[in-house]
Length: 141
Ligand code: ZN
Image (cartoon, rainbow, N blue to C red; front, side, top):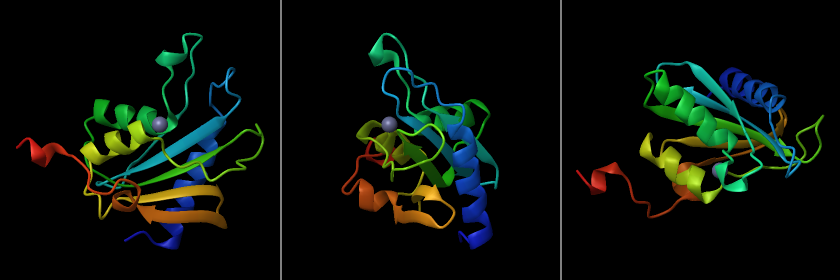
């Protein structure tokens, strides 16, 4: 369901969003691009704070933006990160908190997570692989 063209669009969007990262403390710049079930792409970047605990990751920025715009089902996310301002140099895997937040709005086995440095340099997996035996909304239903 994620063809090359769509994957490229997601990766490009994550790289573009990364340019807006506000990371004066860690110097680790991250961009994320979230694919909504309707086909829209919503982006986010990390937003740090002098009170470190108030920092928000790029993935959650994208999720919260999307939910605030009425989108609540997601099928894929691309994440680009690294310490170099100009170039995504790492495979920036989502932190544990972001994995759980993504879990709230997706089917873990179907949710595709891409960590990328460029269109041609990425790793792709599912959220279920990153967050096995997870706890989700259906546990409370
Ligand atoms: Zn995170």
